[in-house]
Image (cartoon, rainbow, N blue to C red; front, side, top):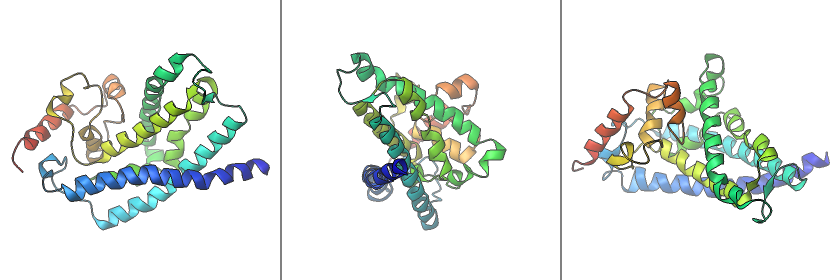
Length: 259
């Protein structure tokens, strides 16, 4: 009973901090891209015909509350276990080798991307899709609010990875925070509905990273482009849409035209 009480006491703070961080970034992205500069950026849209309406936004906002609650509850469990010394999450940078503090972010990002890819593919299995992932795919034309619109089980499944990883892998707390911020920004980028990356992105050093177009095609075409941060798993397993780079280039051609 005391354990449950301790965890429940941490949840309100998690909801407030999650709302402040996620809410601020999502609302800012929506205001700037979908409202203030909408006309200037109309050739930057990935799906030319806008399908987002107030009904979709209201549904996404409702789902976002569930996602925030699940995230806050899961964070409360991780924090509680950390206070008991069960995890290897640490604050003192001298506690572990500097390697974990500097390169831990990149290692965790690769692990997170791998987990996301395979859980995402699992959620597309017909027996699971209609009960869980279908809720997210109701948004075919995506916008920043789509980035938090999930069935409550989905964020739980995607977050579970941190527990076994934190039990065996030393994680510097600021690195965990940086990974969380990166995840939020990358998730907003994926669902933005506009391609902000430059034309050389898919031809240069960063071509292994996904663009907004990459994930947007997953929403519009459904089976393919399952990765979130990187293209590695899609390319290795043959699930990347063959016309992805061609579609990306078409959008870049539109961007170069006068609005």
